[in-house]
Image (cartoon, rainbow, N blue to C red; front, side, top):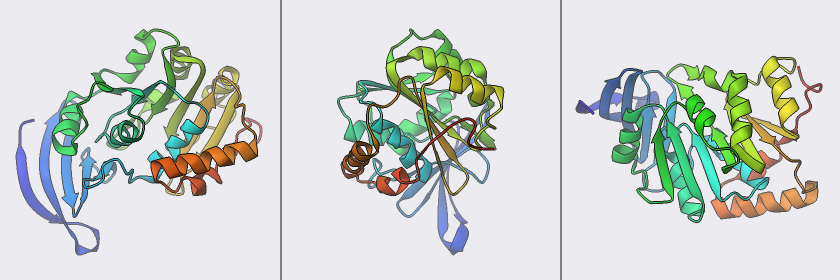
Length: 265
């Protein structure tokens, strides 16, 4: 971390955003700004990589991260792997509401890890571990069947990382998941049904769900085994999850739909 600044700059609506920190590494710029209670991680573009309410860091700000947590409807994992750390919003949330679960985060940039701890108060607890590594290499090198749920949220300054579009990526994620595991991917745009990637996902995973975020994200849920719950019991689980996480998950649950590779495009 090589420079610290405290400059005010105007943001949308004339509200002042305070720049708390700015630095660069081999992948580009990293900034931390704050408007009121909201602290934002940026990578040198107009996109917010992470946003946290510093008075309630466990309460997720971004809609797509809330939707990703619907993956907890399908599995009760003892171990969760999260690809992409950002400011650590999912780390705060999962550690707060699921302190019994072991969390493994994988982040490419050591600078981002340092910023998450220093500027976003990422919890320093044994249950939450952070590995500085390329997500693709991590999935390829870890032991098989060692995690119950994988959240993949790999984004760069201008958009989604191409890593999430590689066949080896979804194949290695499948290998890393235990027999009842689920993979949850945040896509900027859902790949076409006839793409080699979606065809391979359909070959590997027994059950697929999708929920599109109205601001442009598509969250894909991929299960190694079909869910044992029917619609009624799933709705009850969604209510319980929404109450536990103190988030409006029922609204997103109603947008969740089963995905067949011949039913879209």
